[in-house]
Length: 320
Image (cartoon, rainbow, N blue to C red; front, side, top):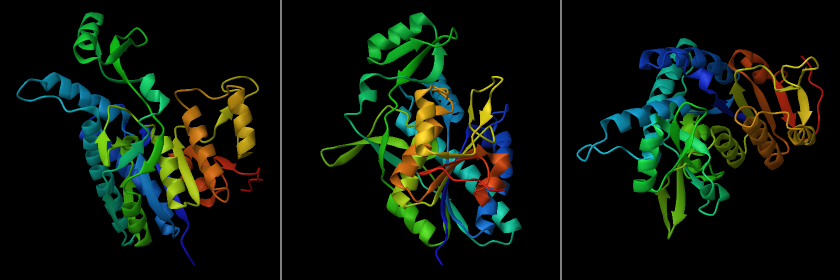
């Protein structure tokens, strides 16, 4: 009997608390690993993806502070690779410890993952994703003139560089990830949405862009033929009429119902919407599969597929 194949996308709260030190992030990931190992105990083959928003932002600040002709700042695609390495290192250490404590002998390793995007993606014509440090208007305008990059004023806090956020097309290391899972290993992959690359004249070139972690996780799950995509966030359920008197939590929901809620603008663009859209895209490509959006603390329900917000091709009754 083949194992259930599960891709688990970690939200930022699974890595970073109010303390951004390496020690604090390692401690947060140890708690996360203790939850995730339950899937391994259940006999599932899992792949783990993660965000890197705060971490890459902090790294860009460090790069900018040390920037000089002798020690030039690294470009964004390289910074994504660097955070894939650091977070992956912490995650695989934490997961190895959790597996050992449970008497499980699976191995885990981080895969520095390149995610292919289309050079023709409309996002390249309209950058929208703020990255890096806050600058004064004067400094931002100077850099725009010198580097031809775009800066915008961000919520009264200063000016920030904005980069494109294209949709993922393919995962370059998909075969390696698949091979690891087929041999009972746990890959940690598409960190921070992956390193964005475009194919040009037969070669792959890194670009200044940020890929949404949930869309990259969905692309990975579909390409692997996963049975289940679990998107972990800060709440147990997706809500409609959020924080209103008639607020309703969504449990078993069809793709068409979720699309209708999107049309009603029920989900915040920078928060829940990309998670819902990623879940929909996965189920549309894998009609026999399920996507679950829930919290790390509610992982047991996700494990049993009877809790959280469960998106399927057709509405199903969720039984606890």
